Amino acid sequence: MELRMIKLVYFKMRALAEAPQMLMCSSGVEYKYLMSWDHFDDQWINVKANVPFKQLPILELDNGTQIGQSVAMLNYIEAIAGLTIPDPEKAAEASAVLQSSQELFAPLNPTVNFAVGEDFKAKRDAMRSDLESRFSDLERYLNKHDGKYFVDDTPRAAEFACFHHLDLSKKLDPKLLDGFPRLMKFVEDIQSIKKVSEYMEKRPELIDVGVEPKLVIDGTAHPTGVNRT
Image (tube, rainbow, N blue to C red; front, side, top):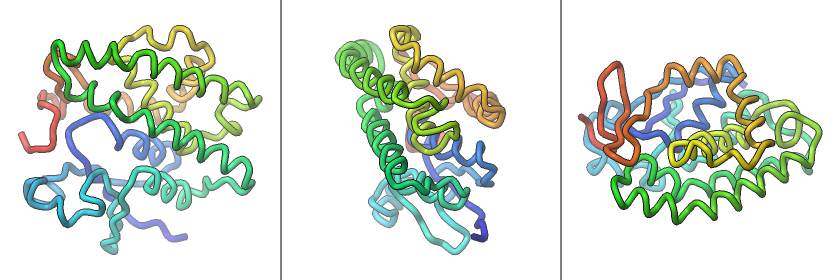
């Protein structure tokens, strides 16, 4: 399949664009990351109605095709990168992990990226038991197989989606994963992938979580959100 130049369009936050970027970086798929206002040359409120499912992120191909929904985006990247799992049973297992990982999005991602003060603390404390339950499920799934990851030794969409949420959970509590040694090893294995570690070193730093969340972009701290600053 001939690869097309891919644009990944999103906002100022560390959320649903992370797994697609790690998957593309690790598999050598070239892409360009664009903020919504730079890509559409307009405020999000003015273009939202014309975007698939009225939400971001999206992948936009050079022929104008726009792919919405995070799982669909990740599946597309796997397909063009030659990472599709041929065994239907293993593919189904990987799909289950991917869907389970994506279910961690709320309230984890909105809380880390936007909640402040007592609201942040209340949401953090309220989600702790559910996160620990989900982490237990993922740890048990990892222990089912002898490979490094969920079905074998190749990181795919499921791995990067899971990793993103585990990584982000550290912004709630750096010790949240301490009771899950297999997940901690999984995080280390993902971080040890050279192209992934390079991406993580270069990506905007998320600072002041729970106080006044910001992304440091090109040396300047910008408040998280959907508007140009």
